[in-house]
Length: 113
Ligand code: 5GP
Image (cartoon, rainbow, N blue to C red):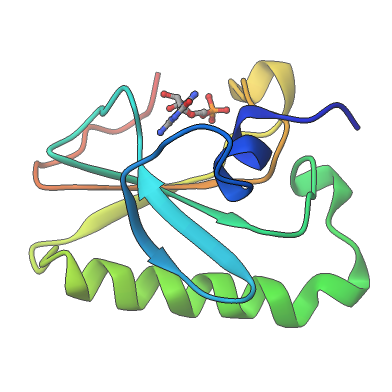
């Protein structure tokens, strides 16, 4: 798997506005925010997309979801928020490292584009 921009952020090769980090994951603000709060949460393990999640990743995925809940609380998204995971070309994925978009601070439209 080619090194992605997110791997470079994990390795501190390029800067990012990091809002949370632990042994398993990293969260940082999206460089092109689509909402007043737009944070990306990524596993440090280089999983390309939802399609590459393995059975052994179940505990890691649980940790990511719990981290999202804590981040939403810390970022004061009390009125609600949206979590988006794009997968593949039709899903709109542009960076091949699994990432969760945490969006909040405004009301979201439905259906998504
Ligand atoms: P995707 O389209 O793959 O679901 O989302 C990729 C996201 O990564 C986009 O929202 C894009 O703005 C963000 N992004 C791409 N390159 C960088 C970068 O170098 N730094 C940060 N902070 N975000 C990035």
